[in-house]
Image (tube, rainbow, N blue to C red):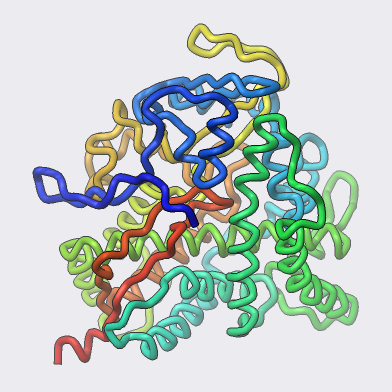
Length: 471
């Protein structure tokens, strides 16, 4: 990977951590320059003024794009007038090889029908029902970490991919993911992620998409090929009356209350692909960045460890413990504020409007950017600082309501938001009470916009078992 300009980690005057972030451009750039720089890292093509601006405008080759960074305008696009701003074809072209016609990409009547069939799987006590699965996966992850806890650098990204893929496999299909499958998933997602941003940028600039049968398509097909046998097996189990009561069974047996339609295998594959992407890839990204931040801040790590040991002791974590792990939850929320797994949402304006005295023509791309909104220098106090305590402050509470959208908001909010938060707290609490994490000297992760916000050069950390360290 070409090394991109970035602000290295530092500490402010109060000694608080300012973690690394990419350097944007200091002035406006042409569409050609954006393509050139954005192919390596999209952040390098964007202007640093977006950290303070309310509405950015860019003239692309064939249309205009507007980056909306003002809370009331973000709400206008995502909540108040959501049907006038459907998902953009840019996102579809970048994600279709993997997600097909999943609920994440569709619009209009098809999207509404899909949500009617999917949403029941996430309501009521369903999140509590998967608690035991998450705990089992966290225990298995800790056992793997014990083998790696030698004080030598460990690549954290594939480890977090393994545990979150395991959670989603067991939740969907009631079976653990094998080590070989986990590695295949990590490698295939890596290939897909490296190609997707370039496809998105080409589409955004009106240059067309990447050619078919490319490595981009192949990686998407590889991931779908891993998932399809599980779906076909589950359909057979449902017909035979032997299917377990899990997420896949719930979705496959739920009929649209208006049409009676049920998902067939290909339709279900599209939905499972987005559950897999949203349920493991985004969570893996968030947890990877969270562990990096924790390793960089000894005080935060010590407080998390104290909380985990006081709440849990030596016994297994229980569902009722989650409320008491409040600092752990705030650390995870802060990690997603600084490093939102999906840094940009792209919508398409289907009617003309005016925002801040600027005309938004029909067909314009309207971009919502959690990366900039959640670091906005006019909204947040010390926005680039890693500060889990901010969530107890008045500023943090206010911004949580109007400038914090890691799961989006409104009708298209991620249905698995509560699922992801529960998973993150369980995994971090288990790790904190068993291991210590340290940064690797000379290695600094560089945030890169891919499908999710990955570290382009990976995240390396040293970890040690606490019983050995304190013996």
